[in-house]
Image: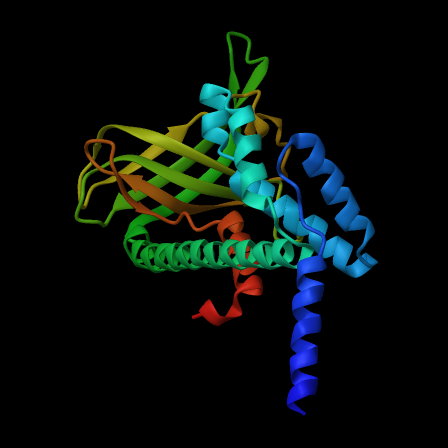
Length: 269
């Protein structure tokens, strides 16, 4: 039994010593030995070897150094010294190590991003409570004649708002939707904002007659009289133009969160 184990050990050592290795003595020798190793492998192992070589190559690259100093020759030299004397199994093992580290970093970054998106949701929910206090009491959309001979029509968004927050507001951001009761598709759904001259102090109520550009989408609308304008307050800026409250968790954010949670469901709250 001991003789059998000893013989098997000798065979393993012999096969290991006979395994083809990469020759990094020159660029030509390196290319030739790599090709020789690839030709000695079956299809599955060859694919792993080639993928591992790519991972090692990109892991070695210092793109900043190459761009700033043109260190291509130095990079090739580093690559040769890294893989010199390596067997296919050793290259594959190194590739798997790099891949595992890449996956770890990728998951770590995803975890941070997921947490940031959840924090954004929490902040938006708090902000919505305050945004609701900036009340749009009345909203209308219509067109009125303009010009000396009233040959053109300009779009008008008429809003009556009351600042129920405890902060003075310098600019308000809205999402306007003009729709008819019997239609499932609105005539327009668009964002707009208004810089408030002198600001709007807490408790103040005012009516605005906003005139969007007549060549904008608002100017192109030809909606019937039964169309109703609904307004959602999206964001409010403070006295110095700073953002106070915002409902800014949009479709892109939700799509990104869903994408990340599909890949890492363990971080779902």
